[in-house]
Length: 247
Image (cartoon, rainbow, N blue to C red; front, side):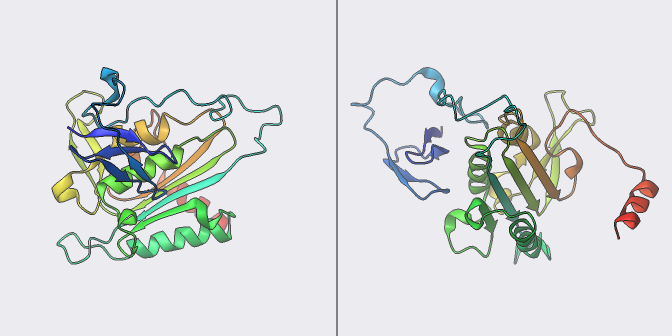
């Protein structure tokens, strides 16, 4: 069973392998030391679980999460933050062309057109030298946690994914077609896929009122990848006319 601990610096939830005495955060690179269980205070039973979702975070300071917009409609300390994932599955039977280029183009767009600071964008591609920026299942999960960590009214968040998407049988009855949509990390054949229920719980539910999340999923079965309650279907002819009007 994996144990979840919070990073000592950025408080991102981390999965601690059994028996490990320390763990390095994939986001801020800080090393968190784990106290000897014989000397540490007793842990509530709900602190650890083997479920996909992280346990409830401790109550934040009053200013950390603001579920009410200010009188002006914008928060003066609003921030921009983005996670960009591009996976080519190079040298495998699943190889794709252009996904890493998509990720680079999205970063260029965010920094040059929408003024996102360079250090507010987390890139996960196979070209990254940092092993914590390789788009494995664990690293993508940690990046999603980081994206919404401490977000507040007025913040602008972006999640971009370019890679394989798939489906798997749903057994809870919450999918009309009987299938959950999934993202396929680089190591999905050994570690499994990231299910839309988890994506919704990680990226959508924690959003406070007034914060904005733009998710661009360039993958198969992406229409309901965030498990949102509403789905917009646009007539193709209307879409083409709208596109022509923009050109």
